[in-house]
Image (cartoon, rainbow, N blue to C red; front, top):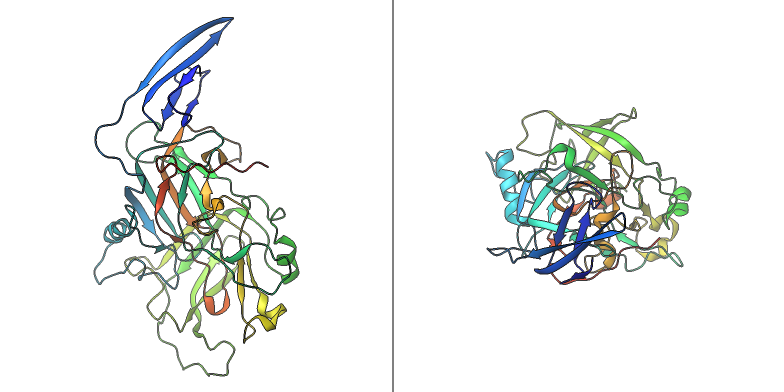
Length: 378
């Protein structure tokens, strides 16, 4: 690059027959190509696009939560709604600047969103953010505690619309390699999780099937002095996985609607993807003085690369497209992304807090919003 109207651009495939150039600002960009000692200058004049573009999510292409305590509520299901209706409702909640949180339910539940432009992959900067409702713990009673609170990490997939057909084709999806996608041992809370007996394994080829519940009402009311009084149905939604597990999700007293997506006709739902390590620890068990009871769950934050893993005001909630990898974990160089998929990466129950359920809110093209957040240097 000899000169540029802005540093918010990306040139990829410079050594190929069809390089890609994307810029976030209009103006003149002069590219320099060198071949056997000779230089060629190419002028790229980026004009302002006609029509108003938005820095936020412009469309919701698909939505399918796994069973969870906020399913059929965020967004609200109404009798007779179809899958198409719920995708539309998810769009009404997520599109634009004034967005509301939707739930992805338990592990595997997902949403696919699109922008009305390609978000450039700017070198050295984080490129986009998908907000959640994560927050830090006020206190967990542990000296020098790692960062944590309510952190329900959603795994991020990105797609660049290479063939410009306006939809994310299967071969265009890549994984954002968050800090825990391959191992948990580099997380600040790893030793605490091991001490607590958490499942700290990472499964990159995980498959989980949920089965429609056979009842919605408890057989008998919970006893007030029962430590599991927050549970109305203990063996509520059965699930199995490709690791030989056969267990149940519970139903709690705080949310009494069905947790199974009510618009789904099938009696089972199967999801595929990466299952992260369990990041929740009942700190009340170790430090009962921090609250009046013995149940005080802290969901610890992964270092980077997820949705609903850090507060939205935290730089750690922003994503760098250069973290993208292929199915084998090899880095890929994308000029930018047009579509983003988020799915819940953790399968765990957190006492009276209920299951770990990723929530998704507003999406942001950080470059269009003028936010410069440096990437993570490791």
